[in-house]
Amino acid sequence: MEIFKAYDIRGKYGEGIDTDFAYNVGRGFGRFIKGEKVMIGYDARTHSEALYRSLARGLVDEGKTVRGVGLTSTPCFHYVQVTAGYDGGVMVTASHNPPEYHGFKLFDATGGSISLNKGLSDIRDMIPMIKNQDPRGKGTFFEDNNTSSYIDFLASTWGKQTCDKKIIIDISNGSAGSVFRDLADRLGLQITLINAEPDGSFPNHNPNPLKKESRIQVARAVKEGNAAAGAILDGDGDRVLFVDEQGEMVRNYFMAALFAEELYELYPGSPVVYDLISSRVLPERITELGGIPVMAKVGYTNIYDKMLEKKAIFGAETSGHAYFKVTENYFTESAIYAVLLLLKLLVRKKKKLSELAAPLKGKYFQAGEVNSHVKDKEASMQRVADHFKDHIANTIDGISIDAGDFWFNLRPSNTEPLLRLRLEATSEDIAREKVREIKKLIEG
Image 1 (cartoon, helix red, strand yellow):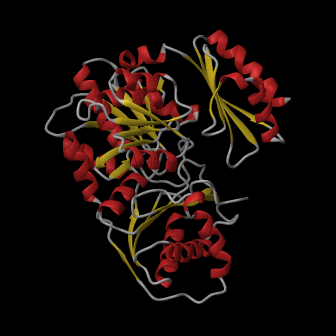
Image 2 (cartoon, helix red, strand yellow):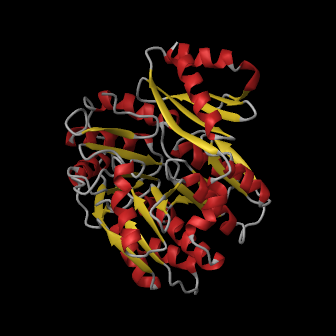
Image 3 (cartoon, helix red, strand yellow):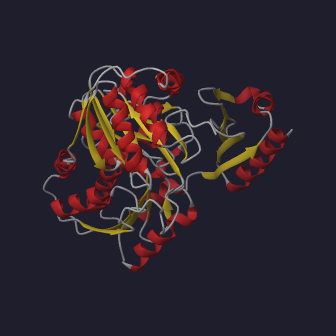
């Protein structure tokens, strides 16, 4: 199994990832990163703390001053790492993957993800050599899990308004429960947490919010508790997906359109970044609001880097990630900030979430992601490109086609022999017909 992915390191524990590997990642990262100060944290997974300890040893052996913040969510970690001025950060997490997976997310001083294209491949290539070399120096490790600055930041965005809306948050037995609990207490919000105890076996459901079965509990809790909305997080608390008061999921690109409206009250005319598999509703709505829609490739590092480039106020990824501008040069991913925005929106609009989302959801028909197993991804892609050669919109990530009454993106998976198709159309009939047509082309 190749554990060095496009944007992070991830794989099954015992199949390439173990404490020895974590130690070597620490040494590799220590040599790669500029500067002396590094911050590390970990999620709730079974072996995460052990990996965190080994990672710390590797960094110390390369002469780094290492601060460990312990069990935390990735957004909280990311905020503290950058605002406290650390030269790099490593979060021990496998994000939304099943419990047998573990991994590492690596960040530079700006908070940007160290992807394969931005240095992760260098660290990968360094590790075999490091094993046969003596450590470069002796650094220090200390633990300081005071992350209250993150709560202070979130509270400052809320102001003095009041909110009587009840919302249910499914923590998925991940690492974000304490942040939500502390903020709710601080602001007096009616936030009810379920599956809030950290448990790396994820006993209640898969930690991936995109899976329909993962959303059953929060949907039921919202309806039974007469809540205004619900949200479900992934294992490290960076992905968030929402359900309305009826327990029906509201896709992230629809939520992003609503968030953009709220944010433009403060930052009119600013850029908003979205990934190229989003519904066309999102860029259209941004334009209607007087903003600037900016398309980016799918993936954390692509959204984040594009936000830095364009000085955007907001970035949305279809998978459930949401990113926000905090200062002129700092941007952070924050599920809990998205929750606060939703509560503000519900209070200001005095409407139910289903009512706010209905005009957006009803405009076009989304076919959903269709995955095709293929032996030759390039040949399949070429057949589709040739067939629709007069309608190619861009090749930013795979191929994007705009044929008037339907449009789609087809791109290869970074990790599997799959082609991923996302299609949207002006009607359900057109969408279903075109999905069948494109699948035949893919299969040859």
